[in-house]
Image (tube, rainbow, N blue to C red; front, side, top):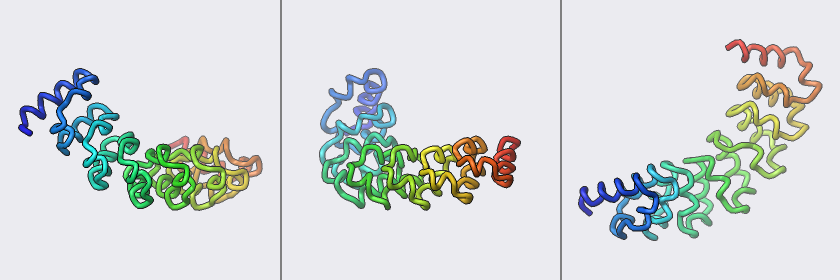
Length: 193
């Protein structure tokens, strides 16, 4: 495909979402075109050729541009544990589009939380009492403490990590720990910085 043809098609897409439907098959088989189209409109990957939507390396590139692309990767890729794990590493928000099987896979949940794009509220109850997962979550965003189990909201180390990240997380700690001097001081320090 010529650079001019690609540029004209991208120009049309920028100006009208309907143009997505009319771009040539040659455009939708061109990696550079597809990635640029995804930058313009997050659902553009659905129009990519089957070959590109089934290519794990290219699909990951598309997901890095926009996590919505995961929805349009081939069914085989979306059912492949390694691909899903890598997709979640690339963009934690992919987790919400993963199958229930993968949303209940501890390793995949942990990867999504480590990336910092997964709200703890989206994970199964079993993971809200998983110390490692909750610890990673509150280190990314102290507010995630609100979705942790009561047991972990009463865990000094977890609560301390949360308030070190965000002093307002103190409100989600257990009543007992909301009265803990060290935790209160750390929360106050966060407001001052």
